[in-house]
Length: 147
View (cartoon, one colour):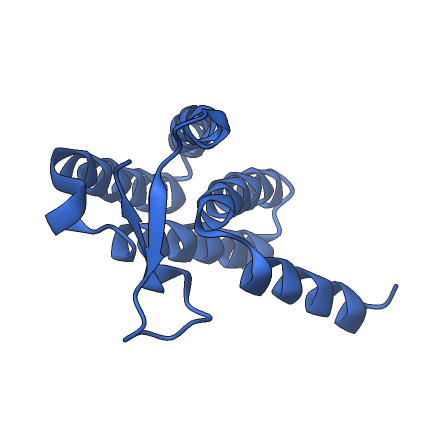
């Protein structure tokens, strides 16, 4: 399969996924990007490292934008604080060459991913709505409401 076919497949997965699956895909993508950033830092591939860091930061920023503080209340506020912390740690790790900061964020994202998997597999999972006033292809358009 060529690069364009893979990109089209990925785009289809994103645009057809339910909101819960999109959250999980975001966590997976951020974790993968940070692991790549760490590997590229170690191998001295600084441009590739920078791209991977940028991708992880973008994904976490999108997760922040998707938070609905009105409906999500304290959970949304806590996630926002946690995502802000992650972004700071990624930046610090990048600037200082401290890969332990990347590892810390990878662990935190992994724990969140596990928690969301449990939520989505539970019989009474969260309900989701789509904000129709926003771009349908933008994950930030998704608003999670507590069950």
